[in-house]
Image (spheres, rainbow, N blue to C red):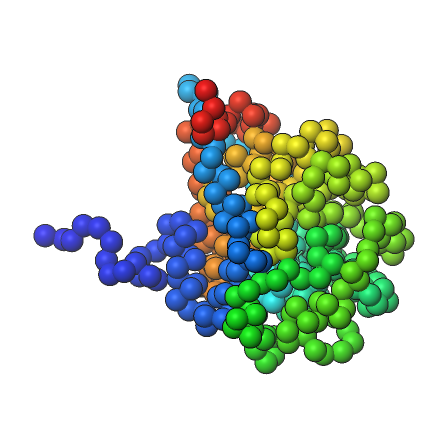
Length: 366
Ligand code: FNR
């Protein structure tokens, strides 16, 4: 009789069915210090844990007999159609996970869905090799002390066809990531930012950030960025309604509710938990995106029900990349999409416009 059930320990044997399967497979392939760099958070990692736990406090309230067998996941954000309300979050140095780096991420994403890939200031492949390949590419910007270098990066990206700028505002310096401190983490030889000019000294990301990031930015940085580029500006790293209002008043075209995947200030709340406050303050004036802890299609539904227009996914994309290169990235995004359409269909949600707070019940609510 054929054996029923999983074979072996499951690591890399059976086809991955969930994002957790991809995470296990990536962990088995990566050097422990690289895994820690990708996976870790700041301090005691309370915020990191909170990001995923927050989703588990919500239950879904389905509506039956709604004829929702083929849900439509498409949306429009910043004037562009997205196949689904998700995008790839900016993560530095994809060549840590796969030799083809961001080029593999872009290829793998394009094979799954037309959704944006946000590349980091510390992308490890040239931006010209990433644009024009089937998905919109956005550039995440760290504003450096040397504005000429920042400006050069933005202008280069614009020439290459990047469609939006994502200004990260939660990192005057990098958070204290204790795993990296304990491991004495340094980037392996050859892993370098491909789009930054000037200098080396990138090997220790936290030392480099302390030397190069402008630690004294204020809201006028948006006007400066606007003066160097006509591209839409998305502000990433907002955690309060008051800051969302300031971002909108300073000219942000969209806001990403983010705690940097728990890598900056440990002890800030889960992004999902601050989303309602921010949605209320923003009052629909700009699209809100959310990242942090999205690991299942139904998490996307939950974030949308609380006011996000779309979510960004960080670590899972790198897990796919480490586990299977471009095909792994495609696999991760397809699983998320399949889980999302499955959840929409079973919950009676025909299109994203049907998603309202009524879809949710919080644990413990009567
Ligand atoms: C990041 N993130 C990040 N953000 C950013 O604005 N610029 C960057 O260069 C990076 N680099 C980076 C590296 C690594 C290894 C990780 C894990 C994260 C934060 C990222 O954009 C996003 O906010 C979180 O990763 C989202 O949380 P999840 O999806 O990883 O839980």
